[in-house]
Length: 271
DNA sequence: ATGGTGGGCCACCCA
Image (cartoon, rainbow, N blue to C red; front, side, top):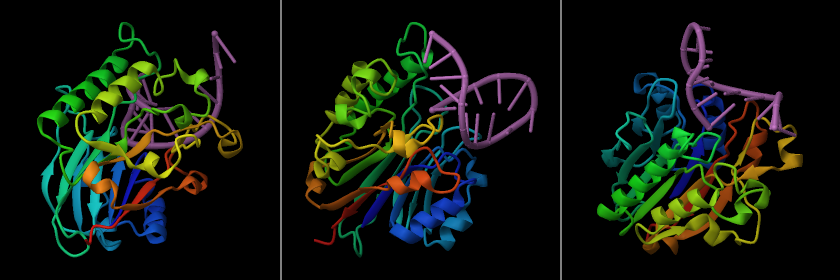
């Protein structure tokens, strides 16, 4: 089972890139963030044509929006609202246990608030919202035992936790996405269950690794001022079933790209 | 320290 996560930054605008990616990497399950359209405007027919007949969409007009597109049947679709707001930042499904997925697997797809520019809750409510969102995630995941067994959590978490998840650790310590306060909050989310950062299990933490490069930086590849904001975690029972990981860096150089690139995990769930 | 570039959508919001 091939699972991918990608902040697409407008699914309608970038449907040609979604198609290119799906034809090249053949993900069975594709989790998108920042779809930026209402459910009725989601290009569902295009996904069905590509073989993704099972869609769980949680969209809203103009902002945010997440979806899970699957070749396998899905059940138990849940879209939770966080922080008492109407933002579409979460959707979850369970893949039925059949065929190449022998037993059910639950997948959570998150788009964590970016948090604004100033890492100070006193003057920046967006930063407060981000921290509250993470606290609520941690509490809810612990209460619901989300990570207990056969679970995957993916998404744009808008935090680069490790020193090697950013191009310059010292320079970014006061930059939202890499502040110690956020990294500690993300640590609490991870401690809400037996979660494993499966990408870092496959890529040495000493190696630099990014999934996002700002639109504002010229020559993104040469300057390489990236951050690893996009994540795939699994419950510990699934960690040994991941055979390969890839971050599709090339996608940042495609025509009219998203500022994020896909992250892919290959699972062996047949045994 | 500043401003740089992209979304949605039509005055600015967001990243």
